[in-house]
Length: 428
Image 1 (cartoon, rainbow, N blue to C red):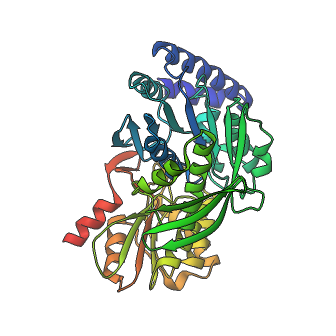
Image 2 (cartoon, rainbow, N blue to C red):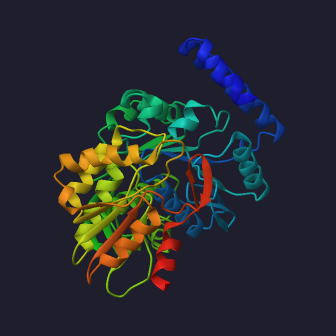
């Protein structure tokens, strides 16, 4: 009934009127639900992270650092949910859950008497008022690159939605000095302190040196021009040097000791679906990653090429009912950086998967990558093909689904996990 009313209103009313009605409804709903659960987040120290890429991994670093420092935490991310050390996979297929589910999470965190509550915050959730009334102790920004333009329309409106987090008077703000949208987000003031991170000369937590390894990353970070931190993580890739530096800068503002920051970063052994290595062969590597934006795919391919002894074989597609403009961009990136491409389906939702692949293929054609591209619609068969053609020293990248345990095809959920499919095929 609710969906029918919504569809009817959208047909009968101007877009601006529909937007006002939606905002009124959402604000009212979150107040009602928040009150029902006793406004559980009201006195919690909430650390909220937003940005296009890197949110999940960065927040996991923050979580490990705070635990190493002796704090009790609760964390809600796209990949995992954890309360007072009790950790489980996030199987909701969303970054920010429904209003009621989030309030239950805050209630459970309150009951566990945690010291800090860590949450990922999306532009959709900010625009739709899902976390209204939740006080923000610290706001962290990773980066802003193309995504969700099907919803926001322009990068400017996308940025405006993200900015709603920084307008909520957080005590602390952490910004990426390397991000091209840095100046836009730097206009917002913290009530206590602000810190920047990155490779930029003006970054207050400056990445001075990065060493990349097949199974990890090292970085030397200088904070406030005098404090040197030698950070080491089990997560490969230069982008993870940025993620752990963001976490180091954030926890430095919170007064965490330097040794606890170093140890906390080292404690993170991995994040499901984030450069997740699937051990199936001694001859070649298989990596599963959530990368589903142009920026994330490009950084992942660059990292894989720097670490692979031989070819990088990419198995990828794109999500249906989402930002269509990014599909050819991702196709061009794949053509430019992958040595072999196997184009396949991801989650089509209610869209024709043939159309999705055709959109990506236009970018592959632009990038002159047709000769190295094979199109296999069935994702199971596509992964099987990659495993079959991989040679010694190759790296297979399977992107888009990451940690997820189901996908939506023709509007229906079906069980699916890329890593499990890899293991199943390798064992057969």
